[in-house]
Length: 348
Length: 270
Image 1 (cartoon, chains in turn green, purple):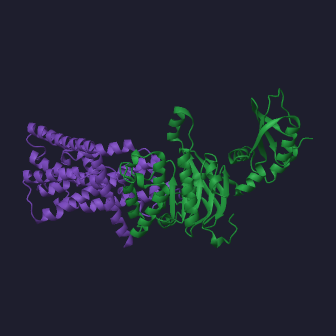
Image 2 (cartoon, one colour; image 1 turned 180 degrees about the vertical axis):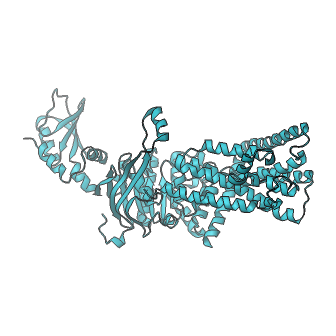
Image 3 (cartoon, rainbow over the protein chains, first blue to last red; image 1 turned 90 degrees about the vertical axis):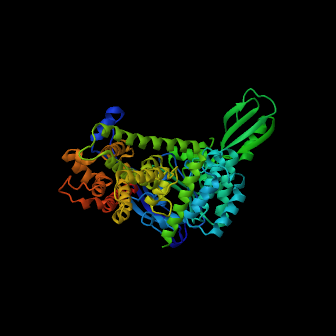
């Protein structure tokens, strides 16, 4: 967490707010026609009093459901949108006031939109970016060599972008965003639609850039596996407000209370009941048991099982971040909420 | 200084990419080129047919009209070659590509102009040839005044086109889709630059002089070079040399509007 002195922070947002004003519009054709003459506006608060601070070199997951205000925040950080309120500094610069100076400090990858030129060999896009960011030739060549090595670009540098696979194109987009050595990169859904292998290559690259170059990374994603693999800190946002800012471990500790024990039975028992655990599924001799780690240790549960049944194998599945976050969106985040629930789950 | 050098470098790259892209799709390019040829060819043919019936239109012969058309075609082709990408801005706003321009360390409008597409100077070359032929055919005297002012007038005419292109694209910050508005202005320009505006009613003449000054792209300069100052006599012949100033004025106004629209896009004042 950003606990350093404020002057150390590379990104500092205090009470950030964004309100969109739009014409009120009824539904259907008549609503649309009515909107032509309507003068009633509705205000929608997209980002509401968001504060956080990032140290140089941090890698943070900025997580939230659709419409939570993730993209709006990113657009303010990148200087595309002017905040309706609050203060914001990115590498010491107020982004919207000095948009071009800010642009030189940042790299942006929009997972769903490419900045590569569709009709031309990948290399041509890099050459154009070299001109746009005025990258010194030597620096450019060195970065190209480095990225080509990590991302395996050499194979398709001469291929028109339209003929690249999504994974290859994405690797090209990453190199494109990093060519000018940005201090901060914003990655908006960088692994969307990619297959497992390509996802892994991209995650590897993000990790390497963050580690070796000390680049600060803000990652917004739906795929929480990205976050789990890459960042120690996450900021959860919902309905424009930050609902959690802290380590992934703490979140897991507090919310990931339920583990799953998978048991292979030696024979098919007609009935399977164990105190303190709930049978989630049973296929032939394979049983999944859900239990609360605060109420019962895995060892104790296994003992209870083996007292009554013959088993051949056991394994434990830890709660995944996906289900933890889903639970927080449904129930809201409350400090210590998980502890209270642990007591409820304790078999009496 | 550094900024200018960077912009120049990007602009050179932009043309390199334009040309590479055009060559990548050669058949498409040839089809476009053929269309451009037929389009302008049929416009000139239509003029010829009309003036074959009536030997002159309000004192303008086919030779005069050829010069009128050639002048407009050259200015228009100059605009299409260097500034047509401004017309793609609404599409970039709609599909979100516009945000990309805002996260790069260069002026947004410059980037919008220098966003590579499939631009090729074919129409400009055709227009240069047409204009040279029309000048010779109309018998306009090629003297020092001509050589100094025609390039400026053509550039000024291209700026008038740019001003309206930019103005319409800027409206997209509010309404996103502006196809209808663009179609109206293009029709207005194409219909009313083909004939001398002296054949139209007073209202249309005022409109084309002061509001959408397409008359400065070709009518007023042609009136000067063809020595037809007797029509619209309240305006002196030399007004035809004002095109560059009119072009700069309208581009400046469109640019102010553009800055206003860009601020709105970023949500200043909300």
